[in-house]
Length: 220
Image 1 (cartoon, helix red, strand yellow):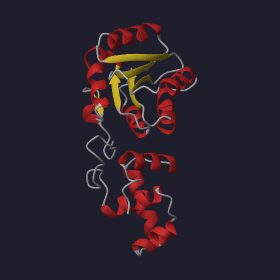
Image 2: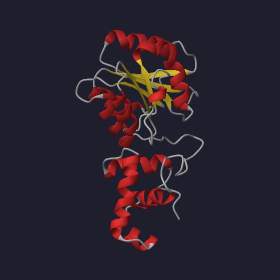
Image 3: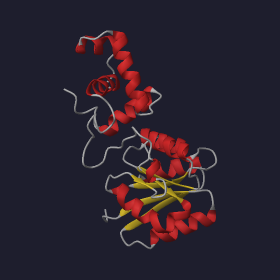
């Protein structure tokens, strides 16, 4: 191990890929370990190389960048994904964050912000392009190296957070209801409120979020 930050690139535009390559190779502490020009080739390359950071374009053939980020969250959780995109639309930012992306940088500002974003994401921080930072969706939270966030910081009540934690651990509604001396209907209400606040639509998303927060390890 050489101590360098291992970076992989995924973009289907040769000119963009060349520019990104130049940016990465100009940094003495970065090591470019692979490139992909489609969703499938990028997924295979990232699985094989297991970089610290994967820089992924949203618009790629076969598997788009957000879908690729979801796959990587499941299959290569140690790889931190940073989206590089033309899209400044709020909905793409929301989708990316829900997929577990740790950075979102616009291509038009890559020369100025990409290296800063890689360094921030490597440290466990969430990096949003400055031009979009004010639009960070409420209720979306990412665990940093400083540790999981409190329920309040996530916009949840303590009971909502507790119900979601136990649900992610696989307890049934009935089991959670018994634990907290609540009705099953009340438990479902807490769970749906928490999921809505965090923009989590499926059980898989709930489990991924709980894992990112460290909730699957710290429940008594």
